[in-house]
Image (cartoon, rainbow, N blue to C red; front, side):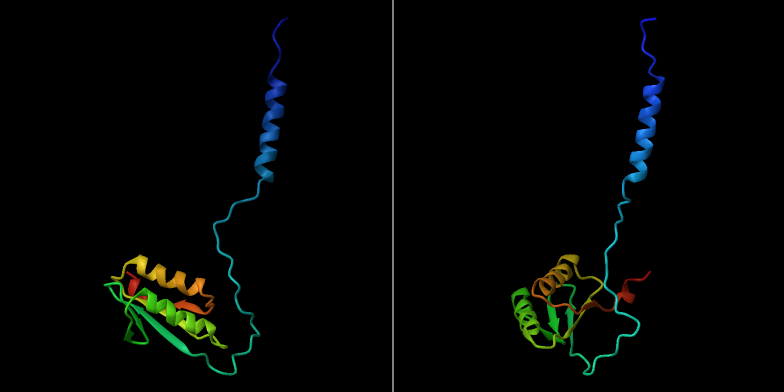
Length: 127
């Protein structure tokens, strides 16, 4: 008989394939967050809160005062980041504001080193 029996070869390859599938780690699409512990005491001094509003036209408001543009927003964020106790940034986008303007404000705050950033008013996006 001149033919080679390939059945054992296929069996070995299938076993190797199953072992490979089992040993590959599962890829999770999650973001790791550091949540505060249960016994974290409240801060002694309440933090300063800075409210940044994004209007439908893409303009920014700093605690209700209009800013001239993104450059002035970055200047104010840089000053806030330089403070000894950083303020809490509450970003409140309007429902009709473009995502680009909201993402630009978040990126600027993160790039400048601000760590206490929150999105406020998400109930307006609920159906």
